[in-house]
Length: 369
View 1 (cartoon, rainbow, N blue to C red):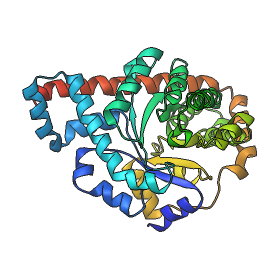
View 2 (cartoon, rainbow, N blue to C red):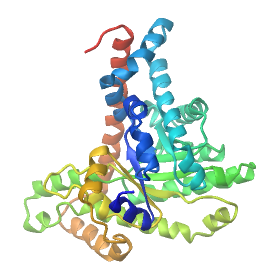
View 3 (cartoon, rainbow, N blue to C red):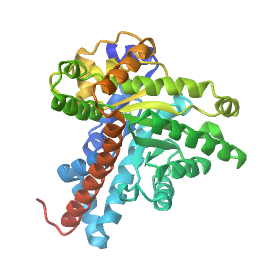
């Protein structure tokens, strides 16, 4: 195992890969990352699948079969993506077994078009859970207001969940309530809590991108000093909320019944501003019980030159609170930033999903762009 990755693991950080493609599977690259202990989980999203299917020629053989069957683009997308996730689950199955279900997970997202529709989201989650049919799968459900009851219902039915597109600590608080209620209902229904996994995906880099844009627009000296500090502060306060959950009496009862905690997962950890260190959203968010899912470029940077300086979250709570306070003093509406990012996050995945359907429809017609 790489020295930096080992240092992260020693601090209690699980390194997951935010990527999946047919080539990654067939080349043996994913298997090698898993065998070496570099990667212990994997996440996907509509943008990842859109890029993979549009660029990876290794989908052509299966597309030809689907073309001959005359299936719809939606059916083809479901077949291709769930097939890849199933294969990735099989590669990561030894990790899942070796960690008692803590890691070795592979996430696939519900159709983002239904992010504001509770019942459609629940049906999508059930369908994906059946299609992948692997105990180490996770179904990604967006943390919209409408998504919260879907999270509870799916967990209550024994479906492992990755709650995605979380930006605010306030929404994370609601996600934790949905998680606890779901596990309480699952336990009452007789499900084994030990088999249900859940993570809460907090998006990082997009927060700095939008906050920095607004700070630059303010053109104030005190605002400039806060550039690049909001996202990490926000995530650190989310971890504080996670620690509070671990002391909650509801959680303690569920833990006694065999449940695993709703671990924070740091997502969108690729640095977008070249002025910032390319490993900052990994090395500055180290704390026990966390997951960091990285795009390949960020993972490569961490392996190449990342430096782990121990727990960088819990000793910095006061600093995180101070940054949020100072952001407010500049006149920046941080709550509005986070609400905007949720809207934009949903829209981006919906756009990627629609573009993927259109591209697959062309491919089924034998047309390559």
